[in-house]
Length: 456
Image 1: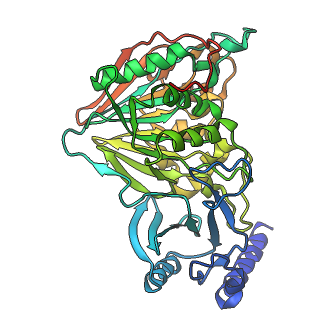
Image 2: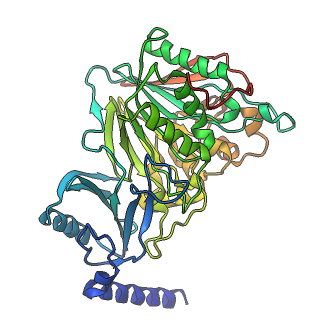
Image 3: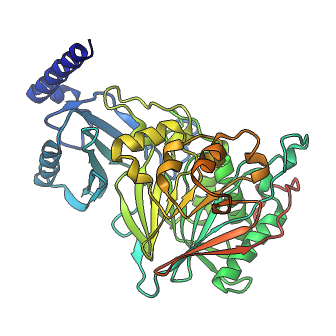
């Protein structure tokens, strides 16, 4: 029976490929600014990739991106399409190969287009990116020194689920601050409202002054803010930080790829954050990251492994997720040959999808950020990461109350390898000599009912 079903599926696929290559794709192609893809099977439905910097809570915007997908296609057919773009006046501005994913970027008439092909799934994705402001000149390199230090910002957490005070029931929140060789910072995400007391905002600013050895009032350069996904516990703290200290913070770049609100709902705080960026940093470079992209920020290399665009079915053009957690932007960061895997809040679907795209070895890293605050099992990530340390954006006291991620992590990691956010302000230096762990602390306190929208 199994062989019979396999034979039927093979026949169906052959018929799809045949008809796709003999004219049916012509009728299905919807991206008017791009020549049609020949070969494979083009999905007629166009996927909305999101609006970038523009708020889209009230509906579509002029910056919404478009993506068409092709299944049952080959690397040679994909290469022919890229060549076709070039012969039609599209300038290739980027190419890369990342773990079997081949990607290319093009420009024509000032517009940006991104394409990539996954050999393991035999799928191609063709994106008309209408929101990326910069790509070719988004990153930069810095030659002096190679070490970078990743800090897990310390937040207060309650000890048990038994507390009735919601102000202290801070279960989420995630923020990483990376000190680079040129004395600038990369900030990843930002905590929840329960962690955003005035005191904690001031503690964070003091900490950033300390690690950059700058004086209060002196500008701190944040070379990049990288948002993993559109939940408020990953942006609220940073949103408030910019409200308080925008005159003291130079934010040069932002990077996030939130799905269209019409397809996957995001938190209201996301649109408020977008508006705050427009108000205080209208000239900041913006990049919508797509799978396969690679660039440097000073001495830190970024490789984009996964976005919500990978969660779209190449057969239906519809997303297979209903929660922005599985639409996180997952990146591998490298400094001095050491790696830090940022997983955001990915769950089982994104984990399986990355395995299907790359194989399990894609999770190998020196430092792992525990997915989704240890809520999910994510057994493949823990089993194959083989990290020296695992950053846990959660308290141990709360994680041990039935969180599946902690059970998975314990199977593969010792207690001293798991670094919980409420225990200390942990820093890990990535250098040519290896990893060096430091332990510090902040004077953070539970939420104090202060306003999120105060602007100084």
